Each structure stands twice: as C-alpha cells, then as structure tokens.
Length: 232
Image (cartoon, rainbow, N blue to C red; front, side, top):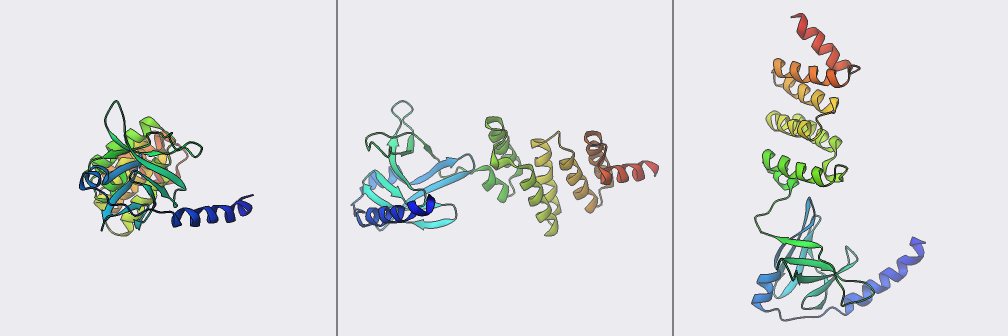
C-alpha cells in the first residue's frame, strides 16, 4: 500500500513546492514568529528568516526551506504537515498550529513558542547541566512514565559512553540521574556502583551494589562485590 501511495505523495510535494510564494515579510511579523517552538517535551522546532525567506531548523537539519503558502502558513515536507503561526485567543501565547487537511480554516494549537533561552532536558544533559536535565526528565516522567525520552537503557548507555571517554564524574552524574528516574531498578544502582568502583570509591560502590542486591538478590556482580567488601 505504501509503495502505491509514494508516487502520489511525491507528485503532491512537487506541485506544492512549485506553488511556494515569495512574500515580503514585515519586521513585526519576523519578530513575532521567529524563535523556538516546542515540538515535543524534548525537541524543538526553530523558525528564522534570512534575506526575507523563511527557514526551519529541525532534527539536526539546519536549513529547511518550507513551502510558503501565505504569510502565516507553510507546508513542511519533512513532516508532511501544513503549519500556521497562530495566537491562542485566551492565553495570547504564540503557537505553530497544524492546519486541517480537509478544511484550511481549521487548525489546532500544537507547538508552543518558548523563549530563546529555553532548553530541553537533553540540551541540558549535553551541556552537563545535570540538575536541570533531571528536573526536565522527571517532569516528562510525571506526564508520561512510558515516554521514549526517558528510557533507562539510553541513559545507562550514555553513562558508559562517558566512562569510556574517561569523563568519570559526568558519568556518575548520569547514573545518579538514572537512579532518580528508576529507583526500583537494580541495574541503575549496579551501573552507578561500577562507575564509583572505576574511580576508586569503594565505599560508594559498596552502598550501591548493596542496594542493587536488595532489589535483585540474583545480581551476580553485586553479590560478589558485597560479599568481598564485607569480609574486609
């Protein structure tokens, strides 16, 4: 089915692009609409203008040129969505709204405009702002405990990546963050203990291996270390 639809999708895209309008945006419009919009709890869309042309940064692409339909509406081929700059009538906050496919007059308030200083939890994490990152990830977990943005395995992998780079203190901070997010998982304590052990902190390694063992009596590494430590 998808292979049959593909030619129609490509044809629609080509036709739409050929209809893109060249507009003379006012300075007021540019100031009002430029900036960051929250695509999801851990991802941004950034709108900006160069030489009176609208561009978008999204998912690693620095310069996406959407199809401009009118001053406030454009089509994002990458999303396959028609978006519109809109202001909520009650809150007066700016959004990028998704325009209905069947009725151009209908739209929803989807992507909230946020301050230029706004950072997602992942942005804080990459900047080693671990407290701010944790606060953001905890907020995501509160809203959706199964969110793909707070996967235990991903944080664990990142922690070990930092260990391989000899960034031990940062790795420990990431593993602590995982403990805060998943306090009932023996694996997060096991990883934190391992990081402490690699830095020569055997006492903190013991405390975390002991916690891992409390949560999972079958954890072989934790059992071996706790037994050896308590014999000393």
